[in-house]
Length: 103
Image 1 (spheres, rainbow, N blue to C red):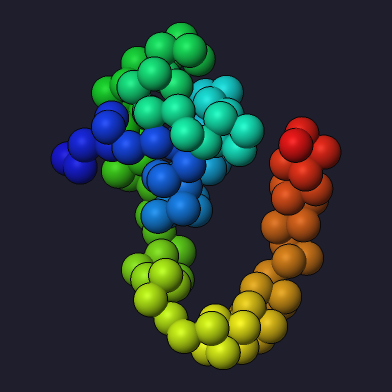
Image 2 (cartoon, rainbow, N blue to C red; image 1 turned 30 degrees about the vertical axis):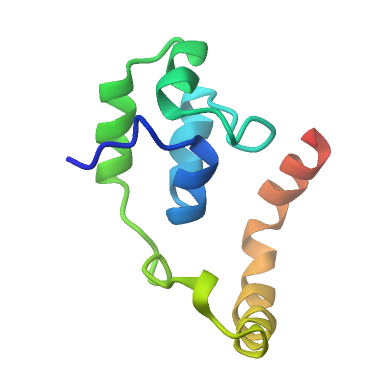
């Protein structure tokens, strides 16, 4: 099992977007408190670290989960955002609006 406990919740979601659903389920704030280490976030949310880690491991990644966007040239990244992200915004829009209201 991959150890997430030393990573921040923001790093985990950045690496695996689907982790956001796990954090939502347990009341772990990955948005405004993204710099909080998972171990501390679990303590704050009063949930067991092992339980959250197991669920993170069992959460499948999307088809785009293995792409390292940080190393892409800016023009390729812009093209990807326009062609892929903008098409998916309708399905994730309500969730994003909720997070924007929170911030």
